[in-house]
Length: 68
Image (cartoon, rainbow, N blue to C red; front, top):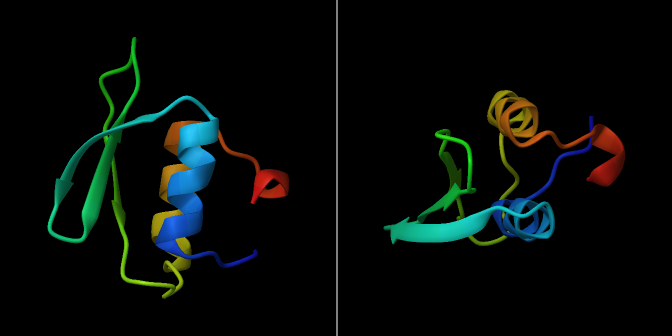
């Protein structure tokens, strides 16, 4: 699986219709209308996200590996 940074994941989420609701420290919190899930993405410069976190966010947001 391709590894990406928090900044890149934020861009992908915004393209999929998720909206940035809050920034708490280095964590960006995204929500979308009609769903009660929240996605928190740690943005630490260009540091890559860990695979487990990336897979969990992809599952919630409905992102395919091809879209990375």
